[in-house]
Amino acid sequence: MPSIDLSRYEKKKKQQPHRKTESFDFFAFMNKDITFGSKELSDKKKEYLYLELYSLLDAGIDLKNSIELIAGGQEKEADKALFTGVQNNVLKGASLSAALGKTGKFSLYEIYSMEIGEETARLTEVLEDLAKYYQNKIQQRRKVVSALTYPSIVLCTSMGAVLFMLKFVVPMFSDVFRRFGGELPWITQQIVDLSNALEMYSLPFFLVAGCLGGLLWYIRKMERFRKISSAIVLRIPVVGALVQKIYLARFCNSMRLLLSAHIPLLRAISLSRKTIGYYPVESSLEAVEQEILQGRSLNESLRAFRIYPVKMIMQLKIAEEGNKLDVFFGRLAEQYLKDVDYQTNTFNNVMQPVLTLIIGLIVGTIVIAIYLPMFQLSNTIQ
Image 1 (cartoon, helix red, strand yellow):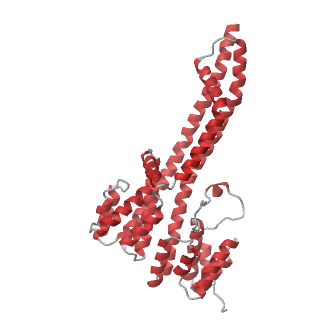
Image 2 (cartoon, one colour):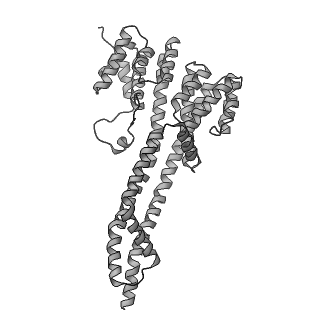
């Protein structure tokens, strides 16, 4: 086999962000891409594949050798076998899109985008767009997880401390109070009753919660449940707006990618609908397809659904008139990504003091309820 010049590829690798793989990072673990029951590759692996493949092809290395280098760089046997299979299919004369399609590990819009890229000799551009798409998707998830990590840890730790006090500390003091007799202060009595209820009903509560969690997991993909749950989430202050912008950014990014690959509008909408994974967007796009088939424009079809802001629809109207939908979808995706970044940072900054204040009030109330009878007893003895 002729020697391969990797100098341009190595130069590109140095320009890419360094990936830490050796030491354990707690926040990297929290941001780990985990999929349950999905046959597709994880978003992180897809990002790696498209970024590496784009870098290799752009450096002048042919497709067969590029895939061989990627397959040889895999640490897990399953991944190495996957890419070796892709390499073998390419060696037999299959296109990259067809070889990846045979694995069943990639979505239709990825395969279709690469197919168009191959037909128009713009495969490297499509691969770069796919890499950016998954980079943005992963960054969205990481920002949301990072914003929720600290409040979740504080809340769980604090609730554990409160439950410990109610389970062990309060019963011990309540026994002391009973020995001295007398009527307990109202707040102390409420805390004691809460402690007794926790002792009596904690096991049934956890059993019911476990069964309810299992039921929700079982019906999570049912259309009616997805419709109701998404409607509830969108009505939650702050959280609803954040979730809306996350999925709108994903939709706009997907449409930008598909339209820039010269995929027809109806086909792009259909493929986006299958990859979004969010009921309000999926159901609306299904209706939008029918509206466009009847002759209506995209902005007019989207106007009927509350999930799409008026500002977004107005920009798409201008884009349709100028035949620049891919450009405007790209701008909208960037705008929503910036909004998500700002809102998650703001949410994190606000939740930290709020949670601290709430937990402080709860713990302070329990402490006051415990010591109040002692003060009464000391005054009585004096």
